[in-house]
Image 1: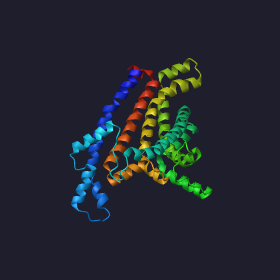
Image 2: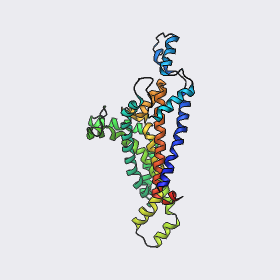
Image 3: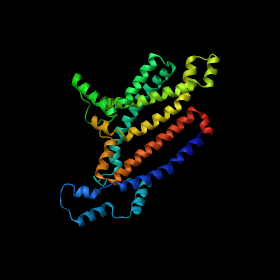
Image 4: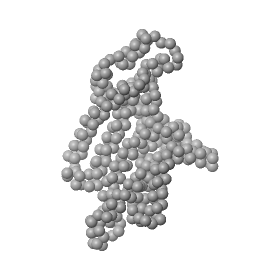
Length: 317
């Protein structure tokens, strides 16, 4: 098992390197110039000498390969550089927003998992009954309703009937848990509902497939208890594809909730990505995209470890 974990971890390094090269090249292809946006966008006349001086200050006058080497050297030292737009350190820009996005992703994942696995299992066991139809209706509605629209309905409902709005200022969990949850629980519910709809459908499909296997029929013929068959033998094998869905959705939530963050006035990673792209802030875009890519790679790594725990044959292979 330990050899399998080390091997999977080492495979992350070349993947991150390839992603870093791709991000750097794609960012340079995006039309627009941050220097012109900063100095000329307001209609102010600026001479070419001033523009060239600003490009030299930001290091944009260097050859592309030289800029890439400087960025990679900084990454090795865990130094992502400074934002070309604000001048603040990129680690600081990300750190003050990552906590919010990470906590929102964790809350949404917990809500989705608690809802999806029991409902999907129940729908598979009660296939064709009203329970199965109710769970499928729940899932289809979750897939059809965008999380940001559900968030708007939540805000309108609480404002209309309770004259209440979520707090506008983010409070860390360790400072005031009540204020923190009052702000994040509603976007977590809105996002977690759609998340759970995807996972519930996957759980139902996987359980139905596993319940047709020969070893399940053998377990029934041996007279094993129903909970043992369903939870120990069937569900554990059915969780393999469900784990993939949960892991990938969690990685998406780190930086993919742009509209939902706007609805609930959350200053998270998604909003920062949009601002960085609109400003053509190359260094900040590179840091954010690498963070999102690292999140996906780490999520896949954790999913692989869970695979090996659910099915030990994977690690032996």
